[in-house]
Length: 346
Image (cartoon, rainbow, N blue to C red; front, side, top):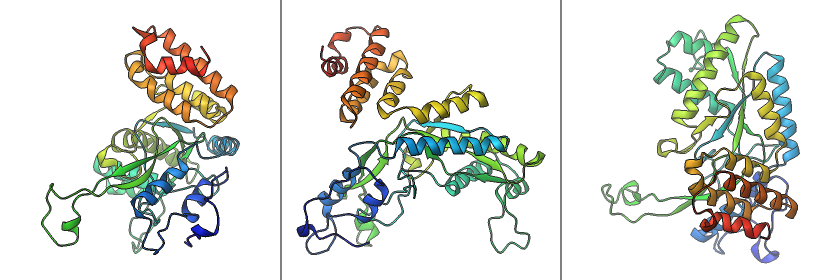
């Protein structure tokens, strides 16, 4: 990585293109003595990619359609899951802000590599489903490359890719065991925390998963069926990506009772929705009991969204109608509803 000369030009602005390339290679927050970015520099750089959704809608749509065709050709259905909590991927990668991020090389969006999906599902199958070593080796392959009977697994795991442009946000962790890590003092809760910013994917984003039989025969199809069940359980209970122990990376299936045909339809619909339409769809899926407290978050996202005035107006009208149809008590006093009225000019 080569830092940019801050004095040589005005502040760079990301205008479309590959957000991952921008985030990883064009950091311009270095301090003058090259000692690092400093706390504010790290925070500013993390937020440089949080203003608007990342990824190209047309490219993501094309990718979803190719993935759907690929899966269908081998008798498999695409698997759609939506984030119930924020999601972190690639945290251990090197980066000037100390915490990295996994960007898809061509799509420029966050993603979950197929190897990570495989590791998560294998952990669930071994530790919670209590599958035999023989079954684990057949489905996932050998763990040790020095295994004399080395074999590849019967199931192939595809990368999990978002179906639409993704909204990111800045989060912060506060480790406070620094003196213990440095060998200066025993661990204790009274040490001063050190805020460390990092990048996360906001909840409510939809990702497309897929598994394939390595050989399109009877046993391979049976193994894929088992893996789909483990994948669902692992995503719902374990979570994917980093920091799952503290609640990150939880998913839920899109359309829990969906058939293979309806799941394909969901993929097609998700791939054609604009970010504003995604917000409307997300609000519509919130139960009436939780609508009052959830509405403000959706309205805030809509206000921050960079889209045309017509798109924002249409989304605000749709959200307004959702709140009115729910017949919430004292609706006119709800701040989210008042802000929607302003957006539509009422």
